[in-house]
Structure formats: C-alpha cells, structure tokens
Image (tube, rainbow, N blue to C red):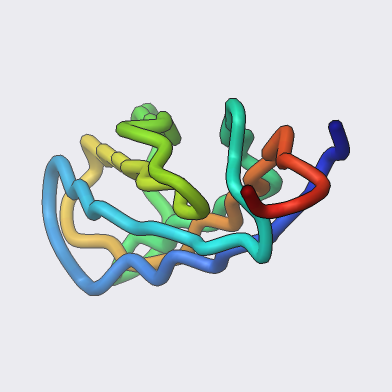
Length: 99
C-alpha cells in the first residue's frame, strides 16, 4: 500500500450561475481508493467586485477505475458573469505492484 498525489488545475471559462466539469487523472499504479480536496480557487466577477455575492465550489470523486480517478468540479457564483480556476488535489491509495 502506498499513497500517490496529483494536482489538477481546472480552468473555469467565462460563465454565469452554476458550472460543472468532469475531469480525470491517471496514476502509474492500480488504485484501491481515492479522494479529492480543493487546494485553492479563484473566481473573478467580470466587471469589478460586488457586495453580498455568494461563491460555492465543490470537488467530488465520481468513480475510481483501475488506474484512473474520475471527479467533478462544480462552481456557482450568484453575482453574475465570472471566470477563474480551481486547483484540486487527488489523493490515491495505490497498489505497489500491478497484478
């Protein structure tokens, strides 16, 4: 048993409201279990800052294949048009040797 880590930068195109994207990352070994965590995020309101805006960012594992983790990143910004990026850390418990 060993832990492996990967970082993924997910760009958020200019959009309004909710945004969702499915992503994946492959590892060099088979994966037993995996989880994702948000390292950082930046959402920029197009047109300048506004007061009383709500920002939501989530990352979740969808599935774990032999050596691939599929995950979803979702954002939501109530203030209008925005763009930005989310940095996600994938933590995987991998098998030391392939079978």
